Structures are given as structure tokens and as C-alpha cells.
Amino acid sequence: MSDRTSQRALTARGKSSEVGRGTETPASWGLGEGQQIPWEYAPAPESREIVQLKSRYGLFVGGKEIAPRSGQWFTSLDPATEEPLAEVARAGVEDVNHAVGVARRAFKREWGDLPGRERAKYLFRIARILQERSREFAVLESLDGGKPIKESRDVDVPLAAAHFWYYAGWADKLEYAFPARDPRPLGVAAQVIPWNFPLLMLAWKIAPALAAGNTVVLKPASSTPLSALLFADVCRQADLPPGVVNIITGPGEIGLALIKHPDVDKVAFTGSTVVGKTIGKAIAGSDKALTLELGGKAANIVLDDAPMEQAIEGVVNGIFFNQGEVCCAGSRLFVQESIAEPFVERLKDRLSTLRVGDPLDKNTDVGAINNAAQLAKIEELLEAGQAEGAEMYQPACDLPVRGYFVRPTLFTNVSQSSRIAQEEIFGPVLSVLTFRTPAEAIEKANNTPYGLSAGVWTEKGSRILNMVSKLRAGVVWANTFNRFDPTSPFGGYKESGFGREGGLHGLLAYLDLRDGH
Ligand code: NDP
Image (cartoon, rainbow, N blue to C red; front, side, top):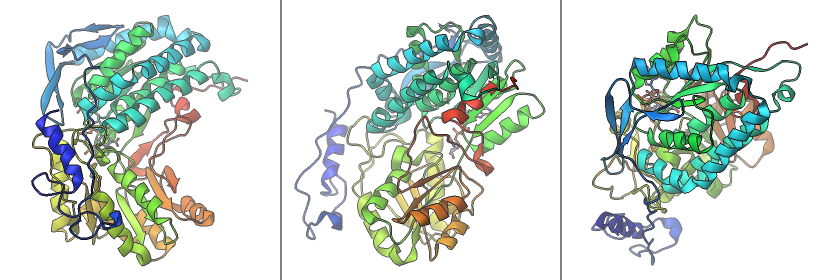
């Protein structure tokens, strides 16, 4: 056990400032003033032995790992320690041209005409291998991305496999999915994904593309390339024909060169609204199909009849899952005024039990922020919130000395127009606002340029139906939050993008539907 690990374990005691979690225990624990909780979490670090990191990763093109023609490399860091993990190829434009050419040939010569039942076999194989290697993927995802191991293990990796299972099932049934429409693949798909769910976003993009008969060139985010490069190994293990999946790593400009390439038929992007707009402009006027899944500023609305404990857990999950680095995070909490005070008190109690620290510890709730730039952005918005007059609450807890960490944060006294209520913070920061009537909640919730997701907490079905029909968001959860399923379409509107991923809708984005009859 390292010193840092043991120190973090001790912090669970809510004991003294020497070990750090703070001197006060939450009132809901039923302890008298000054009493300390009588137990502590043992450290539970997941072993990283299962991941065999190479010192260098090339590009994955044509079924093999190749050195970049650019001759350049960059380093991927562990955000929890700031230590380098591996060197990764920095593709140049010539590498993009090569990868797209390879994907085009694979589409023409083999994959585009392969019967659906044959494509399905490969997708089933990939799903099975992801499950078999799930621990390896979970550890790597936490190492490279900073997310708690319990989330990569229980959410990211199982959901990624589930997407391959689900779309494998559709591969030989496209004509039943879209009857009388003669569904055909589009061709080569260029896919650019972000760093918050690297493997899961890869699965959201690659599984439907392959099921529909397209080939793929995918660019992961520069701060989290490693799980995509491990996925390249899964493709080899599954004997996927060379060139069907190609993975190129490099900076944003390479993503732009990729999506603009004239031989690309379909562009799928998940990331910031700013880059989404750049991409929209860059390919406007071309005949490329486009789906954009962008940012969000979701409202999580708690009505006065909501079951309090359940709603508290839902609010915590809504904003602190994956350190709040989630496009659909419930970053604006709207609580009905009549219950606001006790609700916020309970919420603060609950925040003080969150364990911040080593992403590989199985007891960690809030891991590392993904990269230094993101941490700086969060810190800047924390300052902006205070400068604009909001009250900031952070539970007492020590943060690890190295790495990109921030305390779970809650702001009260937030005005509708303040930056922390309007901008996507993409961190563990919750802005609390209040309302008197459901109509006021809806109006305030819709007062955002985004429209990705929302949540409603109430005991009455009629209130749910009323609010769901009026909230301008692509996904609305009722008495739950951040619930994902491959069969269910996900996407937004307004500045949150367009197009849907998941379900049959997700297939549509990769098909050319002609009139068959
Ligand atoms: P970006 O949108 O910049 O990055 C997402 C992906 O796009 C990455 O693969 C990135 O590559 C690539 N990219 C960057 N610039 C371009 C470009 N001009 N053309 C094509 N591809 C490009 O997100 P950031 O990582 O910079 O995060 C900034 C903010 O975006 C966050 O603070 C958050 O608010 C939001 N965000 C939203 C996400 C969502 O799911 N809605 C996900 C991630 C971020 P590279 O990594 O090499 O730069």
C-alpha cells in the first residue's frame, strides 16, 4: 500500500485535519456533536497489473499497427498522478489520407457487400471479447481518463459491450427494421469522440456503423487514446477484416482534416458545442451525413412531493457521476421552494460522504478531472460563481497532492443569468435554484441554449407527464437520472446537437434508405 493510498483511506473517517476528511460528521449519520464514525474504509485499490501498457502506440490502419507518416508522437498522461502512461502517434494529414483510403477499399471490396449475418458474427465476437477483457478495459479507462474504477467497471465497459450485442442483433435484420426502404450503408464514416467516456463513445459510434455495413476511421480525444488503441487489439482478436475499423490519434486539427476528407460519407461527432459548430461549417454544402452530440446544461427538477432520499441520490448521481464530466449531467438543480432548505441541508450532508481520490480505489466516488485544461476551466467557473454572488459549499476533504482534483461543489443563491447557471462547467459543480410552481420550473429549466437532458422527481405520474411534455430536452428521466440503454435513443436539440444514437434511430444515421417498392 502506498503512503498516498493509505492516507486517502484514512480520510474516510471524517476524523481530524491531520488525515483530512474534516472534523464534522453529517447530521444524517445520527452521531452527536464531536463524535466520530466508528469505522473506516479499508483501502481497496484495483491492481493495474492486468494492463500491459506498451511504451509506444502507433496508428491502427488496415488491421495493423503502423508508425505515423508524420513521424511525430505525443504523451498520454494519468490525470490522477500526472505521470506519463505511453507515447501515442500524432497523425498528420498524410496519415488521415491513408486511413480513409484503406477504409474506402475495405468498404468496396468486402464489408459493404458482406451479408448482414456475417457482419453480425464479428460484432458478436467483439461484444464477447469486450466482456472477457472487461477488467483490463476498466482499469485502463480509469488510468487514462481519471474516472473511478467502480464506474468504468460497472457502467462504461458493460454498456460498451451491450452496444455491440444490441447492434449485432440488428445487422441481419435491417430490411425488417426499415421495411420497404432497401437500407444500404453510406460508406466511410469519420468519427471523432471526446475524453469523458472514451470506450463507451467508441462503442456508440462503431457498433451501429458496422452493423449497417459502413467502415470507420475513428479519432479518440488526445487525452484518452489508450482504450481505443486497446480496442484495436480486440478487432484483431475478432478477426475483423483489415480496414473495417481504423483508429488514428492526433490533435483536433487531424479530426478536422478527417471529417473534411472528400472520401468520407458520414461524420459523427461528440464533444463541445464550439467544435460541433466548426464541424457543421466545415462540411456545409457537401453531401456528407452528419450527427452532432454536443454539450448540455440539464435541469434536475425536484417537486415538493418527491421522495427525499431517492431524489438526493438522484441529484448526486446526476452531477457527481464521472466528476460531472458528462454532457447530460444534471448541473442545474431546481428545488421547489417549500422544501428547498431541508433538501439542500441533506444534500450537503451527502456531499460530505463522497470520497474524492485515487480513481483505481474501488471506494472512490469522485476521481480525477480528465486534463489540466479542464481543471483550469472548472476553477475559473468556481471563481466566477463566487464573484457573481453565489454561495459556494465544498465538503472538507483533502485532495491528493498530485493530479487534477477538485472538491465536489454546490452553489446556492444562484441567479438565472449567472455563468454557473448558463455555461456547461463539465465538472463536479452543482448550481441550486428554486421555484414556486411547476410552470415556473419549466420556464426556468428551458431557459438555456442547450436541450440534451432533464430530470423530474415527484410521486405523481400526472406531474411527470405534464413536465416531460413541456421540457425542451432530448431525454427526460423521471425519478432517475443518467440511465442509459443501447435500445433507447439519445441526443439533443438546440445547441446540444442533432441526430440520435442508440436504438433504431442510431442505425438510421448510418443508412441510406431508398424507396424499395
Ligand atoms: P472538444 O470538443 O474540443 O473535443 C472533442 C473531440 O474533438 C476530441 O477528439 C478533439 O480532439 C476533437 N477536436 C477538437 N477540435 C476539433 C476540430 N476543430 N475539428 C474536429 N475535431 C476536433 O472538447 P474539449 O476536449 O476541448 O473540451 C472542451 C469542453 O467541451 C469541455 O469543457 C466541455 O464543456 C465540452 N465537452 C463536451 C463533451 C460532450 O460530450 N458533450 C465531451 C467533451 C467536452 P483533441 O482531444 O485532440 O483536441
